[in-house]
Image (cartoon, rainbow, N blue to C red; front, top):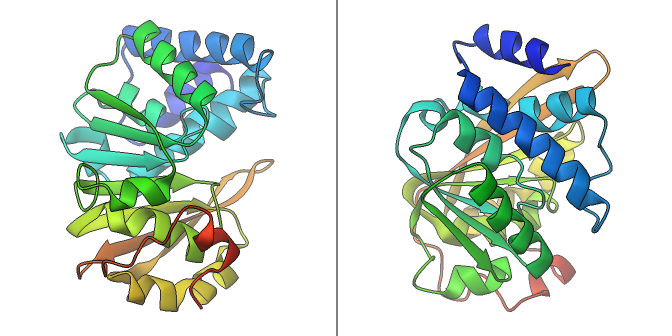
Length: 240
C-alpha cells in the first residue's frame, strides 16, 4: 500500500485526508525509519508495509469506534511503542486528547519528538509502568477510551487497561487471529476488574497482512482497589 493507495482506501471509509495530513504521515514514516536505526521500534520499515501494517491498521480502530475519528474524547494508549495505533488516529482527528503510557524512556522521547515534528497538540507522554499508572489518581478511571495494540495477552492487558477506564468508557484491544482463546482466557479477569465483554469484530487487513480482531470491553463497575497489582505481577500471575 503506497501513500496514494493509503489515501484512497481511507476515502472508501469516508476519511478524506488533506495534503497536510498526507505530509504528516510521510514525515512520520521518514522519522520512524531514521530513529529505528538507533533503537528497536519496529521490524517493519519498508514504506508500503508501514502504510498498510502500521498506519492503515491503526486507523481501522476508528472504523469500528467512530468517535475516534470525529470527537474530542480522552484516550489513553498503553504500551504505544512507536505510536501505534494512537498517533495515526490523532493525525486523522486532531481533537483527540491523548495520554500515552510506556515503560521505556527512549520510546517516550521518540514520541515526544515525533509529536513536535508533526505539530500535534494535547498530548501527555507518561514514562511509567501501566500498573503504576493504574494506581495513580491522576490516571485511574480518567479516560473515555483506553487502547492497546500487541502489548500482552488479554487477561494481562485487562489489568493494565481497565483500571484506567472511566465507568461507561471502553477498552479496545487490537489483536491478531489468535484472539478467540485469549478472550476465553480473559473472561474472569474482565469481570473481576469491572468490565463487560461487548464482543469481537474481525476483518482481513489485506491478502498478505492477515486477520485482525478488535476486542471491545465496556467498563461497568469500579475496579477493586487491589487492582492493578504491583508492577510485574499481572504478567507473572494473570487473573484466572
